[in-house]
Length: 443
Picture 1 (cartoon, rainbow, N blue to C red):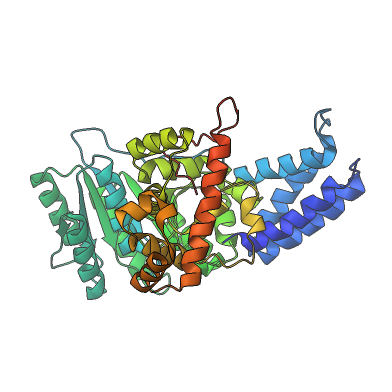
Picture 2: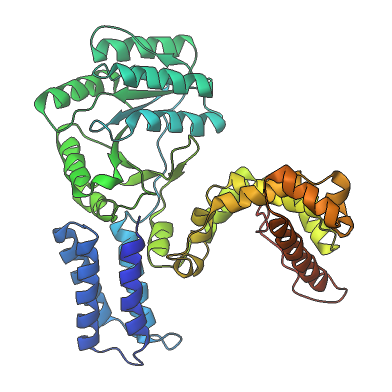
């Protein structure tokens, strides 16, 4: 989402790093380029103006540290100000004190992704030990009710539906949640194609009567500054506690995310990074700023690995690597663990410096599936002892996986090179055997 902005800023920083001494003129020219980059990314012009004034003021008044160049210090200032622009500190969602249930109410325009986000929240916090229920108050679109019911069945989460007014449905849903002892209630409200008095009155009526613990505005990141304008309207007329952006993995310019906190005064709490139910992540301003500036996001990468990877298998793999005992069975296991972490392009983008290097390259996840198919076409003995795979066996593996013999030859050759590298690292007395963070699959 922030690729275009990141590329422009990287060019500005490259120029700054080239100066042994940064003058007022250097700073002024660099900030002109930063301004252009932000405006092209569709950031609110008032937000850009205030951001650059803060950066310039601090850049001119800062005392240059001996350990870093002036250019690096200005880059750090821009990073810190960008973190502030995105909200500063991460803010966790609020829960009601027992015995009261936590009530989250989702508001926003039609098509922003509220219904799917309800299910994503229910899945995330159900996994964390909560007992969620979803209430379908979007009576404008019968399809939204059916969608929520379908998602509820997939997650084994109860969904309350009803007739009457949206407020009647909400109140009846709360009564059912109490009867079923659900401690997290997520209310899906109706949207419109644009802001109008009828929508605001309906949403405000529900909020005043159910008194939600949190009210989240759900915004489609692809709609740019329209999302910011809508968030501001809801913040003023209804009151919101936080923003959830959907489709943040898309190719939008990113200006909405960089503007909404300043304009509304509320934090971004979550970001939808894909279509799957598990593709909802807490929003960390410092991590997002680092990714925008090409610094990667190792913390999120490790957390994602720890959420999806079997830790016992990871510990077992570390031990096998130390003993240089690595075969196709292990390789297949690692591929399957890596696949759980999501698209390879997204994973690689979290590694510092790698995301920029991969810019423009097509990372085809299907190649991983082809390798997996070839390995699965091998017998257990062949996976454990690749050296026995002769010509006839290679032909059989190719037929079984729908690959060519050349593909099988290439896979076996590359695997042999990997084994050789692992043996080199595992030699007695040699230091530097790569030890991955616990839970991180080797690529």
